[in-house]
Amino acid sequence: MTEFKLGDLIKLKNGRDYKNLNSGVIPLYGSGGIMGYVDEYLYDGEAILLPRKGSLANIMYSNGKLWTVDTMYYAIVNEGVEPYYLYSFLSLLDLSPLDSGSTLPSMTQGSYNNIKVFLPNYNIQKNVSQFLKRIDAKIEVNNKINQELEAMAKTLYDYWFVQFDFPNANGKPYKSSGGKMVFNEELKREIPEGWEVKELDKIAEIKRGKLVTAKTAVLEGKFKVVSAGIDYSYLHSEYNREKNTITVSGSGANAGYINFWREPIFANDCTTVRGKTDEATLVILQFLKLRQDYILNQARGSAQPHVYPNDLAILKIEIPDNDLYKIYGKKIMPYNDIIANNLQQNQKLSELRDWLLPMLMNGQVSISEGYGPVERELGMVAEPNLSYRKEVSLPDLFPDIDLYSEVACLIMIEQEMNRRGRGKTWIQKTANHVKEIKKDVRLKDIEFEEYPWGMFSKTIAQAINGNPYLTQASWGDAGVFKIKSNKIVYLKQWMQEPRNAEFVAATRDIVSLYNDPLINSDLDRIELLNTVYRCVQKLNTYDFDIIYQEMRKWPMKEQGYANKAEKFKPYETKFMIKLVEKLVK
Image (tube, rainbow, N blue to C red; front, side, top):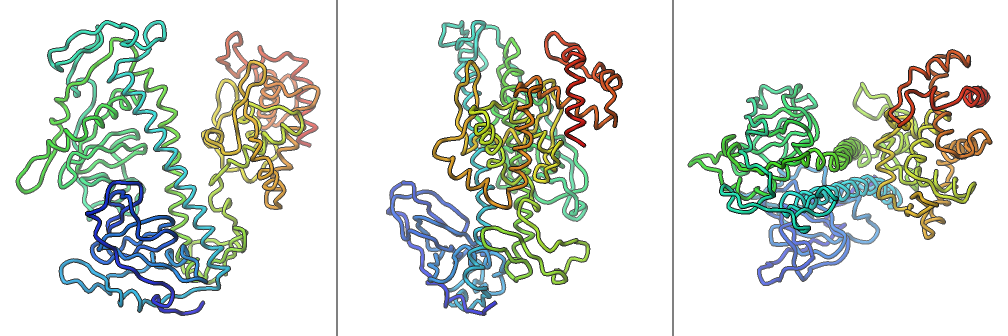
């Protein structure tokens, strides 16, 4: 590590007034973050944004065109210094001792320029930056996926419950196809014939949270305490609301702000709203979001603005005369589950980043070129309860950080062997067999659930949806995924990397197994393979009678079969038992 003064590494520039600018697409930054978007820029490139007045903790990184106001400096980094590394170093600093403001926190250029900075050589800076950017990029991808899914949920709600073009009995848009509308006196507008109007508390549970303070809460707990802000306030050891709960902030500057929690929470200074089912709750969420401005305007109180449960209870909501709430919920619930999974993954990634960042900055952890192993110098880390290995890779630290390449690899090998693409069911079954039969460590922490047609993983499903390597195509009457022609060379390079060799070999073994004459790449035969293998693992025997008896206890929802034994003939099962025995031994 070499010591520098920050002023030797950057050129610090003042922000400027923006009032004469027009609206545009270029971010406008203040010390609180993005204030809006304008049509001109002060700088185009990598820059570190350093607060001049206001929130001194809000140091930001930008790569592209920007404009900063007078409360925010922008720093152009000198050649030979990796901007993102320097940003990461500075983000760890506590600037409060350098505050020169009497009432409003302030930082002068001189205070910034005199900050001591410790840097390793440029190659190390670059490798650390690439490592951190990879984590940040995954978080950003998850955020964009969530935004798209939330937009799709809103669009469907608007189409069905605002425009009233839900599917009629013939599957056509109700209102656009001439569905009868009647005028409702309470709402002063037309609604579909047969629909009712009720107050919200007639179809939802609306109640206040329970008081807990930062002094009485167990701050080492894992459940978020939701109070009067736009995010959670602190943590607690217990929860009082289940996941998929709507909250409305109860008091303060954000009184009336609507949020939605896909995890159990402790509701404090807020009102919670839940429908009778999760599906109904998702409808009510969209109903309330459309009325966000109205609810914010209900805040009242001379000293402290408040929004009360009754402000929500008396809202009028349209009630369909059919199962439309349930149908909407079933369509949107998979989106909701993906969003919840992405949020959980982002939390783990943020925790990983926050845990590693101080050690990366002070040299306790180093990263070899190309995101290779993270080498930990044993004995240099203060935490006595943590167990460290000499080398830990990014997938070790967070196994399911990105499975796009792994899922695409399954399709690539199938195309190489059989010149065809495959659907989602095949991908799920294959990934499960790579994990269970080949014991691949990369998939060891991926959870699969039992479904009538086989094993299913939400993580694998997420890696299929929006996969940059895959494109959808037709194979006979079926829809399949194939590798995009312009991505083949990149995927092959990934498959040839030494760190991916074991996974690729395991996948080839499974796909080769599918080509056995007994299986012949048929999905039913692959299902039988999975069935027999799981029976063998459970019963610890290859005895046909015992296994077939177990298959009789294995219920199926597939039409025409009561259990697995009815679907698969005895001779097929005997042959598969022999194949599994050979495979395992």
